[in-house]
Image (cartoon, rainbow over all chains, first blue to last red):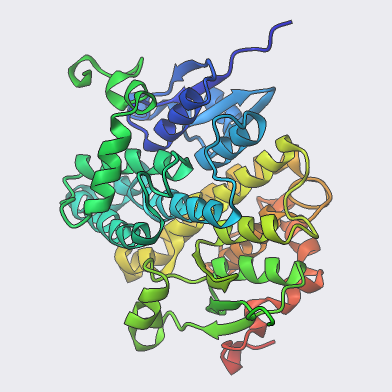
Length: 216
Length: 216
């Protein structure tokens, strides 16, 4: 019996979903996308059906190996442990720590503070300055950390989980019109990564649920 | 030459610092505490001296093995890889995924949305309802997830990283007067864990920087 194809519940614009899409493609895992529209019908993630899958009512959610997993970094760590090639965490524990520190800085210290559900709370006229402040202050710290960790990519010269977090966060920054000129290292690494196929095919402008006017 | 004693930059009330304190004690790592007062002088984490250590200007920050690490979960994963006994992640990859999912749910999905820096932004009269809403909605999801993962503790019968996140988050919930009665599993596990010595000696009411009136 063939193992069921993994199913990724995803939203084209969700930066956390994009992280997991890159991991799946880099590791050569053939998967099916089920789009969850975070806007339409007040948010399809709030449906009873989806809530039964992921009580956090968030994308990404991945069905794989009989498991249903939420939380993008937990998903990537699981893929890394069960499909180790190509690796997304370096071998050296100190470098692994740098990768996880940068990933957590973005996934815990920036993204949650500028996601849709928080922006709804802060009121429409405060949304843009709020998002800009959160992203700028995170990027300022990240730019400094990268001075001691980066090679070609965030940590040395191998693509890692940290890079899977960086590119989608830069896309959010651009969407919220954050001035990126103070972060030359972030900019350089982002551009280098965007040239890689795995980052291109998983891009929000090329998903099954990308609206026609945003496709590229 | 003896290796330098690890230094934990910590604040007694910081739930993220508490997670790391528990890990250090469980693993029998002798460490020194340097208190960083997040309130006094407008926040000692914003000093130039501390910023040079951790550009995110956050506690916990751990100096260990010649590294300076921020982000509590990245720190705990590093300790796990370099000091594997007793383990804080189960052996089975599926159980490890559950531990990381619960840890990220708390560390990325609840705590960042109710920490001091966000509460400052939402305005004084909105702070309590904001924090209560964030914690309740996270706990509602967590309670449901625990139905399929919990044994004596969050995942099975071994203390794991997920438990190190749970107890400090419940303490925050109590501080913000969240009604915990809808979460009997969270309550039960929290009580069981609080009986363990590693959770007691690291408790916010027993730190070098705990103010006299809050000591117990």
